[in-house]
Length: 212
Image (cartoon, rainbow, N blue to C red):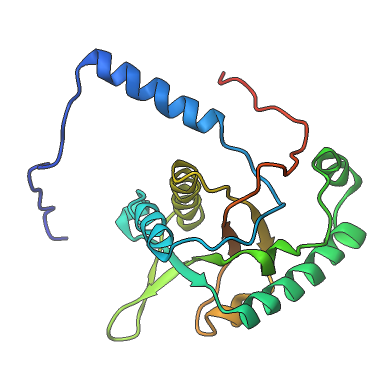
């Protein structure tokens, strides 16, 4: 095994305690204002905002620094239509057959169901793929360690970046769309929405727990 190489941490900056406190409170306040909505305006989102949010997500820490994610930004209306059809088929099966009663009871206060019209309304969808292994130039596989956890962290940073840009994120899990967006990949796919929501939209009446 080759010895590890280290370089100086050139971009580190330590803030005064008072400024640390101000920044911590400001960030907490931002996160407290974050909500998930599923009713949207169809106003377009500038492409540069999408790109910056994805770049931020790609800076996430990962197991052995293998960065086991692949982001695909979807703006084509026909592809978004396909995603909606496949998602609604998957969700119809979930709500009517697969989901246990306890799960449906937990979802009831959120008012969710199999209908996903926002998948076509959103100007962009971001498909987040989990890469469970990589390929070396000679075709050999390289296992990606803690792939799901790493992609979960990256997705959390993506949501945070979206929130900081005052755009509301929502999420719908889709397991049947791997061949739709990237035919040569395999893994788990979730669809993130980046779009503006109108001020007269409604939210489920629920609260977040205080940290413990």
